[in-house]
Image (cartoon, rainbow, N blue to C red; front, side):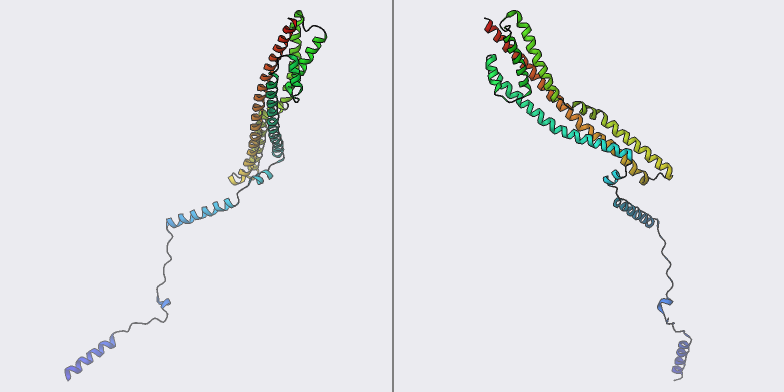
Length: 288
């Protein structure tokens, strides 16, 4: 009994001397404060890239349109654009006009030659041509035939001594009508050549003026930001683009018209030679 009592008393003393664990009233207050995490270099780079992407998106949303550039042009640039625009419209209109005129003239000449070459005498040719519609090559025939009739009225048509003079007069009368017809086909060719040669320089003048104005703006604003000077320079470059837009179709139309007129002139030269040969054979037949 004494041993048991002693053991119980020792355990009781140890329990009394051992402190109980303290139960915190507020777990949040008892927890130690967490230290703020430090920002790494990678995180800073990602944030910087995100900011640049946002700025690029804002710039794309504020993209300047072509019409806005035109509205921002100064008086000199706007005047250049108007002049070049009118030249472009006129050149394109001439394109359709030349296509129609050249195609009609080529068809009329082809049909006339096909019919004329069926004749074996001057009178037969006159009867055939009289039924054909009016055309440039028909005026040549009428002029040559009129000279033949005048020579017949003078009684010189069957005279061998007057033969060379008759041929010269017939050829001269037909050449005059040929030149008149080719001149009609080549109307406005000088204007087309002027547009093709001068439109790029007119556009370049507008570009140089616009760039000068842009640099003056840089000096006055004391800034070299691309966002500030880019619209002015872009608007100035529109003048060069307009000059090329006016010159390119003008040159193409000029070359097309010159080629068609050259073909028409060659066919008329051939017809003149054929008509003179027909008259010469007819004179020989009557003289013999």
